[in-house]
Image 1 (spheres, rainbow, N blue to C red):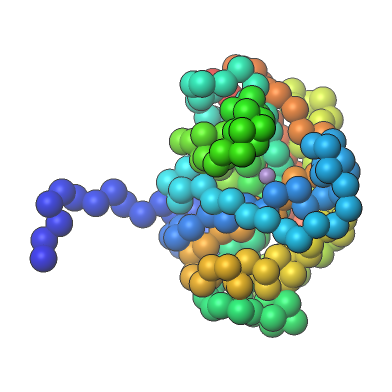
Image 2 (tube, rainbow, N blue to C red; image 1 turned 60 degrees about the vertical axis):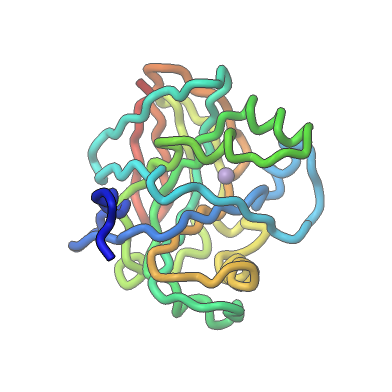
Length: 230
Ligand code: MN
């Protein structure tokens, strides 16, 4: 069979040290830091929940460079969520937390950009979140650092500043569901495949950005992700 049109090239994220990581799916974890859960009006350790973004929402930004995203339509409350991103290198289903590490190819710094006004409306109405989360350019991301280079990241600062003003601050050790536990839970619901990215949730301090703002996210052991809103 021949395609009736030329398919789009697969989304891909550069890998530190060479090559690119072709993106299969983007999974995101909701409310995975206690303080952020509280700022969103929730408390306690509830089972993790997931949503997805299309693979082509990634906007790769090299370390040391400043990337750009367009302010999207349909919102007047575009918000930043800085997140540790886990890149899956080996697929599987029903993966035990104790074995999860073998499935991790590496890590990246990601921004789960959110049309908060649209998301809040959909939540209120019990409707799907896609319009708030899964829009184009909603997943700026640094290069992927192989775990062989970074080592296992289970603690360390995760921060975001806007125009050099601190906004979000947390520590990877404060994840309600650790990376290993997240992979366990996620792989019960979906068969993970090489190329999957997992946005693991954001610490407290989410807030709005305007056109012209410069976001700088940092994760200890990885580096910085700089993105301007245009
Ligand atoms: Mn998020």
